Image (cartoon, rainbow, N blue to C red):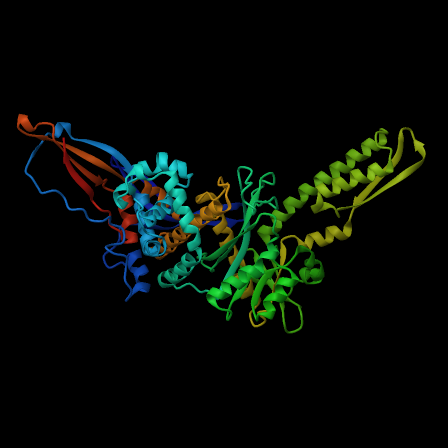
Length: 593
């Protein structure tokens, strides 16, 4: 669910309000519907901060306050006459999004952690503040460190909120901060586990694990992890690294690891499991993984450690359950268009769950139909080449057929193909290609499309529960999508191994802040899509209200500058009320000529 802003013009006035909108699938494709309209916060209705604070009873909250900048005393008040015609507004800067990012940083107590673990000495800007700038930039407007120096930081109000002037934020200082951050990865994960546990009390019994990749721009000669491998970003021409991420069923991250770009997913499991068990213990851990990570060796490894698992299986294993797929009995609906049933497995030690989805069937059918059409067209072209005498060599004909089948691998069993010599030759033709549909494959395809098989050693659970736990893997996929699209983890421009790992660590911290905001919005009744909220907060600016003073001639030219936050509109006030937040009115003031 996500927020959508509506505007309605009535009696010459434009009214703005919010609605909570849900996307859902139908037979005709994706549709959207309004779940509810959000009005002003009613008296007695709890705000999102109140609900979030329920888990913090008896624990210290960030000081001096969650979002307000440090209080700077105003100069001594004076009585002066202002020239109204010369009042102006200058230096508009982005305020709302960076203010929210800094608040999330303090809510997670990352400012406290960074002040404790990062070294302190004679540096002009504390490393803890530089870390906050790097993560806030990744959260609000992900770009390069050079862009942060030259444009982004100067266009925001972070200088007022953190007290760090723009001339002190440059690439050398940011790179140095990244070098100091990387060794604190373990301390950071430990801290976030505790803080997320206080805020949201997530269940760590069910752990979702998956692997993705992200690619580099450049040669990466100083990075031994940069290798060519299977690219999920459709960039096989670039070097890449692999990322393994462990999250809770709510998508809250528990940890990650960086692997070489040519490493197979299945070889990463033992390392991840060992590290997660060292942090959270062995007991009551259920691992949910996709079929790309599954191997008999990995499952044996988990069983030897008394581990539990729910995993996907290779597509080829479906052939062993063709009879059960055809049977109409014992299927149970778990949601619209999805059915599951238990099938036989290893006696007493494992269960297999057969699932089928109408949406998945339509998708796979369309994909396979394209392969079948391409394969048939290729076979017809070979026939024409043989008839015209351009294809006479039997060896070359079989090579061409092999390349055609390899290119259309999804439909390689769709036809029974024969290449035979013609004796005597018929005109220019010395070879004949004949093909006919494979009835056995067509029958199997009809029942297998849209089906997939799950495997588990949780023998006490029913098929519905097992499927619902497995389908939560989509939370990991959404995590990868957020880090790649919203936080721009790809492509990576850094060339050194440590800088690459530091870049990923900063993206990880920004992702934790993203999920924290998502959970906060969910408890506030604002859905679970932070992007519309962040875009709306980015419209809230700060600026200098310049008030020229009317004074005696000898003191003329003085101006009173008030750095203020603009008044939010009515729709923005609704969001602030729902989150339990109050914008500061003034950041600072000064009197100058």
